[in-house]
Image 1 (cartoon, one colour):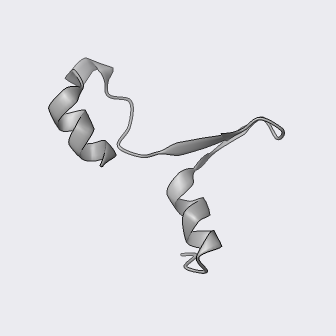
Image 2 (cartoon, helix red, strand yellow):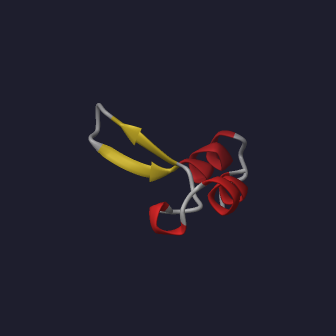
Image 3 (cartoon, rainbow, N blue to C red):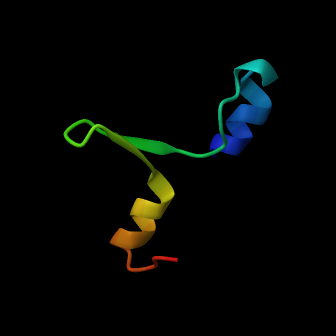
Length: 45
């Protein structure tokens, strides 16, 4: 979905990434959201 929106709705100079990231305010860290979802589903790579 992010890829499609980036290619059809966002100016090329505005694209930062085709990935979704999650910010953890308590830890002050950023992580790739897909990997966290895989872990939750027991599909860790």
